[in-house]
Image (cartoon, rainbow, N blue to C red; front, side, top):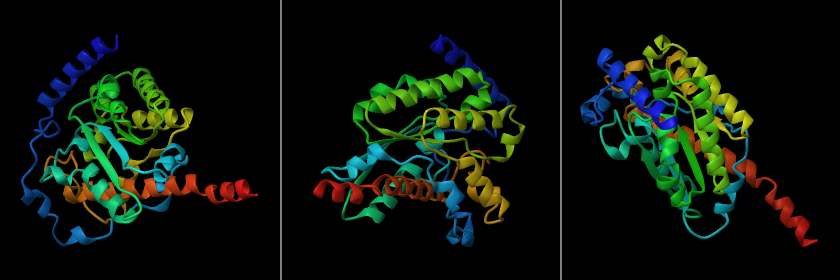
Length: 279
């Protein structure tokens, strides 16, 4: 049933792409000039407020990877804003930015590997279908699951969307990994997508029900705009839909902050446990 419905929703996305060419852009990276057009403001701070990076749950499973030998492996699962669309170069995608930032922060104590499993245009059902073969087979310590935008554009039934999220989270947790949900991005036309905020609420609800943290990317991007740190043209690609080099870097830093917070929460009890065991 999920496969047939996913096929139908892909057709819906195709019709949307024909009707809204400014939204459905090519997966080819934009020229470097587009990213550099941000100008002097590129150096302005884009640090997320504390309340947006503080995780609701500690990364308890991932904390174990910090105390054993070997790389800390993260798999970034998602669609085009995980893959690379809108960036000037594949190395500018948020997973690559995240890997560089984590290794900068934790060197030399720990090395992080972030594997990019983003595929442009995919919905939650598509990602669920390749979860075992392309994500869990890598034995990750943490999975960051970015999804929801394409489901909202295609009008996937909310109950199906919630079910797919729940199934994916269950599978990731059963494999012994932590999971962080990364919710929908903000872009100007999203306010005209029927039910867009319903998908934001659905992701938050599933995260609560499944006791996993969620990063509010939508709120973060709105924060950057509402506080006049940037304009939409500065943090989005020329299509005003996908992210660009600047916003990918900002997102990578935001996710790094959140991972640091989740690991810190999980590690707070460790000294107490060691003291207790020594008695």
